[in-house]
Length: 115
Image (cartoon, rainbow, N blue to C red; front, side):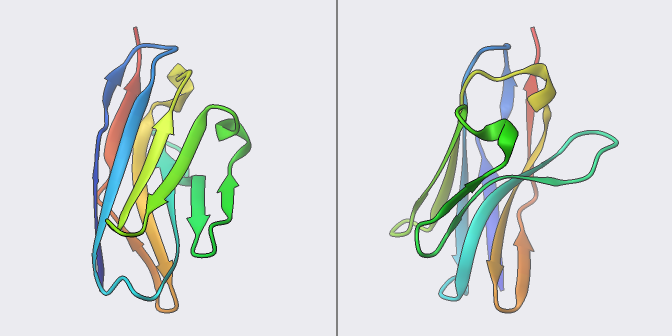
């Protein structure tokens, strides 16, 4: 199994920045990709950004130019740096790891963008 623990969420004003972290533990040797997803109230969970084991990055359109995903493989940590935040970025942000067995999810961290 893979365990994922997110941190770094909170309240930020529009136009502000926030960084999220996700620490992976357990059987992490077979992870093929790690990513950030988000779910706003009443909406489906959607991809924000992810990084594949070969280093390829993938961003949702709304995240391009504002969000940066990165992974520290030595520390088994995934990061998401968010800038120019908008109220519509308000959501619970989840970390996900993909391996040959399926997907593993963290518990989520709330990000609220409001003045």
